Image (cartoon, rainbow, N blue to C red):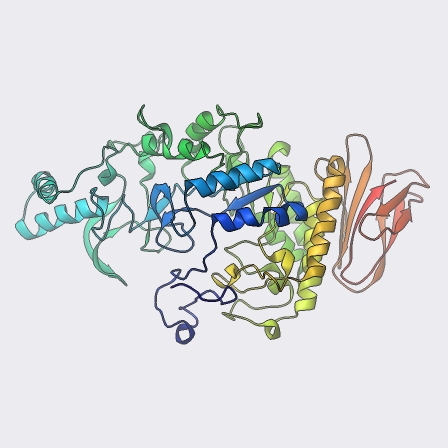
Length: 516
């Protein structure tokens, strides 16, 4: 389904069937593409962005594209490899980096590898095993005999088998069942989604329990001597990729990936999507960084009316204790994402039980004020501050897919954009403090959360946040009497006295103070 208006809402059949008139999820498209990103690079550069993280761009059946059809092609809705090369080249001109979401845990049931619906010339795993099971059940053949007969029949029909042995990559059982697409043989699906089919863990390189020749690891990583593996092919496009699969596989990926030098001489980043604690991936042989959902959860405690500031500080302290400093300072820090309710909606009291909210369903101004605080926190805290597209412009939304509304071109909240530019600018101007400095909690009480950052030079920075009514706040500081600090957001000055700094914080106000 092609949307005629950019301002339409994403279809959400499960909650609003009458409005959408289509029972299929994730099959509506707005027309955004790779060339469109290229056209908006100057806007992003002006905002202060230095890297862009894109969701999967492989050819796929859905709009989210986590159900890849073919790892070797770009979805034609998005463009082609020339478009991608132009985007990469234009980003390099601007000193920007591209991170691509590589999904190597599961593929789509409508993929060339699985081919549940018999659409492709190369034999897919489901196509193969369903033929075998039909022969076993209808003609009472042994599995060995059915394999021989199935191969003969498929080849007689003009089908060919993949040299990568796709037929052995998945867990398909001789057990009849049914889903919304009809009757089928049961197979292992990803978290109950029949359209997403995981690979067998045993077949990744690094998984010693693998007993059947599948070539999955060679296809994904090593190649066959003539052609590179899928992951390494994408690096030829200047991209960085990662997704959670068995750790042994990532150890092998790391060895290959770290042998590459990018065009600017640096080494590629390996970043994993992890919702829980990611400590197991920071032993030096897997990821460099993970998406920091743990921090996102803590920010909910910080900036929701009923949130517990002390609980948030506890979560953040645990993160600092659990992660090596090298990893902690490279975490992909997020407030929200394409998998969560929009932050401005949540902070404004919005409920995810409302499928397609309007501004009447939450307090936009409160949500905006708290989102400003969250942005200030991100730009002052260790890690890689990450903005979910449209947050900076006031886009709101409920749970997935409503959180994936289009960017509000022409209807942006200019005040909010100005705030993002300012806090990003402060971080970029004082990276020795806010990007690399040591962090220490100064106050976590009531509506106040404050922390300091100390550069190697000894210079101090302080981020002070007030999610409540205006109040005077006294913070402990390790600075000599008479040392002055300037809030880089307002120009307000404060002077240390007796190991303390007194600040007048307005309602829902944040400060980024730097020692003069």
